[in-house]
Image 1 (tube, rainbow, N blue to C red):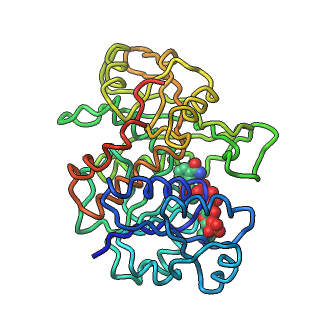
Image 2 (cartoon, rainbow, N blue to C red):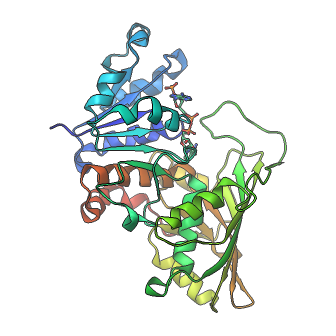
Length: 354
Ligand SMILES: NC(=O)c1ccc[n+]([C@@H]2O[C@H](COP(=O)([O-])OP(=O)(O)OC[C@H]3O[C@@H](n4cnc5c(N)ncnc54)[C@H](OP(=O)(O)O)[C@@H]3O)[C@@H](O)[C@H]2O)c1
């Protein structure tokens, strides 16, 4: 049986994911990559053509086939056919939950369905390296790849507070997510000034801490977390201020040692987001670094022996891409050792120092 990965949506997350899965399909053990593009647009022609030249197959609704083919873009499958034949479906739209209800829950063929950060409740939340051991092959057909900032927050907690058999040494975690207003791929949503977000959740503040809480809950760990968010008038990377209060003493030496020991964490002495972004452009996969977080070492401080305070940057789509690929490979063959081996060719974009 052909192993087909089908991506729905060609936006900020969908487009690089289609490219990554297509470029490495042989190493990942994928026979075919198909992608669903809803809207035939003259302005999108060049990027769709490039994805197809790399080997991905275009899928659309029956009523859009003529328009795509009129632009010289061969449609390989119609939408329903592509869904039915897929081994794993990765929804990269802001409508994953709606699509689950309307389409995915009616399909028996695919071994797995993934949706992205905004789609809370789609399935078990997952971030590579944080809760792999919580995934159950027979149960977790639906998986939510948590948002980029949730990857960052949960990786920080796991790296700095996880004491293994002694449990999680976290008393309380607070985070301020300073978000870029829009992505370089987006032409709208620019804001002229910093815009603060409301604390819509009385327990967690914003969805970032809530999502991190639920991710750790899959490991039977319940944490006291709170987050706030502010949008900045920049297109560069998200930045996060964090404060982790431990229930035991620590030292700066222990903290930096733990950061260095996690190969999914990058550290930097650069204090400006544009320099990290620029590093990604020069040394990343199509401009992306796949690390879960980039911690600015000179900002890291241990206060009163138990509080770890600092700043970090979020490799926004990079960390979600890594988890999306890892979860896809795991749904194809639910053996984490095999997943790690197949991920080897993209490990070079997991930088430990930037
Ligand atoms: N942006 C990031 O850095 C980032 C990072 C981590 C996670 N995420 C998550 O990834 C998901 C997608 O975000 P994104 O930033 O990639 O979005 P986006 O850039 O707006 O792209 C979404 C794409 O989905 C397609 N689409 C299909 N059905 C749709 C529908 N019913 N409504 C709207 N769009 C539909 C559209 O493509 P066509 O019309 O061309 O098919 C659109 O280009 C969200 O869950 C988000 O939380 C985003």
